[in-house]
Image (cartoon, rainbow, N blue to C red; front, side):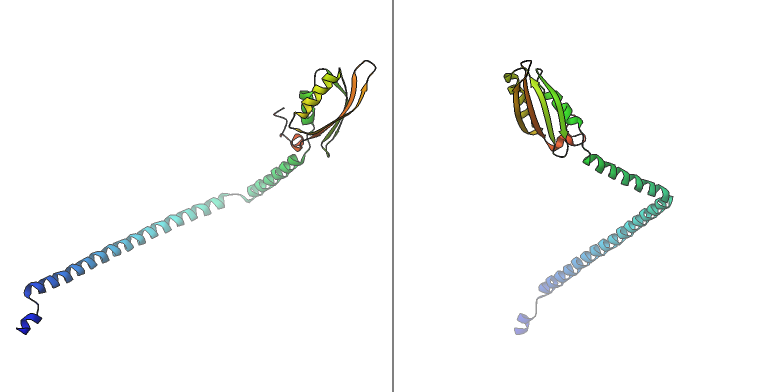
Amino acid sequence: MADILKSPSPAARLNMSEGRSLFVYGALIIFFFMLAGYGGLLLLNRAQEGARDELQEEVRLKEENVRPELLNEITALEERLKNFRTLLDSHVVSTGPLALLERLTHPQVRFTNFNFTPGDRKLDLTGEAASYGVLARQIVFFEGEPLIERVEFGGLSLGQTNVINFKASLVLAPSMLQFGAASPSL
């Protein structure tokens, strides 16, 4: 009786062997899927290497077709354009202050002297106004302009023809003197 208890029944033996066989079949299925995936990756790798080789050959052929003198000309042109851009960026343009002055001058004010110092961005003016009220409006025009950093008035005197003589100094914004910066908006 003790032997009967220790040895598994025929049904239990069948379940154990089925469990082992299912495990083996599952492992084999996983193995074949991994083998197929590895094979697919190898094929994909070969295709990518072939495409890379074709592109390298195409680049090599195009490099052979490019003439060295053409490359030298392109390089020289690029250098000239860079130098021209540097020259334009550092060039002082005096038309911006003239256009600004034309736009902001009151109709009853006349400027008799004009002196422009680009290094200081300073515009010294001497002028005549029809009255003190007109001169005050001219000052307001200049002070309200964002392209003018500082406005100084002085030297007031009454002229022989009952006009008000004055002197003004305007310090302009740096953008007024740069090529193309202030001119279009004026």
